[in-house]
Amino acid sequence: MAAQIDSLWPAVDADLSDDALAASLLRGDRTEPWLRVNFVSSVDGAATHGGLSGGLGGDADKRFFDVLRRLCDVVLVGAGTVRGEGYGPMRLEEAAAQWRIAAGLPQHPVFAIVSGRLDLDAASPIFTDAPVRPVVVTTSESPAEKRRALAEVADVIVAGDDALDVSAMLSVLHEHGLTQVHCEGGPSLFGSLLAADAVDELCLTVSPQLEAGDARRIASGELPESRGLELARVLRSEATLLLGYTRRR
Image 1 (cartoon, rainbow, N blue to C red):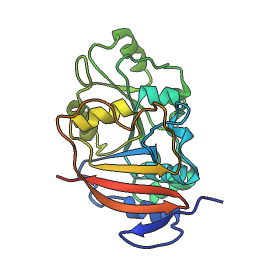
Image 2: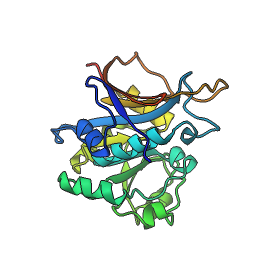
Image 3: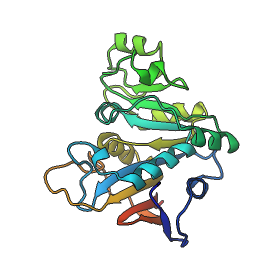
């Protein structure tokens, strides 16, 4: 049985279906660029358990995670997270794919991987079994031979010289009609997006456990100033909270 998710605010509603969750999160004007980030954290702020974010996420987080993928044009992930969390091809389950078709969207979102060193295997199923040609985002200082190899199986975007140029990356994605961007981590990529003030929404699952130790936070790096947020929603699944925040601008 799927984990029950209830809405506590701004509306009170019990046992939301996947379709109801998706409908409440789907943005009406898809021509307006929107960047949504999804993370899980322990109550004391750890972004990982045993080195992986998947160690914190329960059934409700996994269910919400899958619903969020229905809504976007492109899923954006750092290469370290792709390797560490064991990502495969960006292929949605049949019910989610059919929901997207009914909503006037392509069957599957594009998978975009951000990598400075291009430590990616062009023969990986991520590329060879992808239902939609993936995108690889890198910098001009990445190895040219690796860019050429990956260009055989993905669209390669060069955004920045020695560091990721977030504005340049998003401009290219938007030019290709990929305006609804959903980022799944990791902390370094999230930090870069925050530094560029490119994040419009944060979906944060608060896992009901304490980790202590020296686990990373959900974002790393330096900010010129803090980023103010507005509370958008509060969902609950037993002791797990699924919170939504939008950028206060």
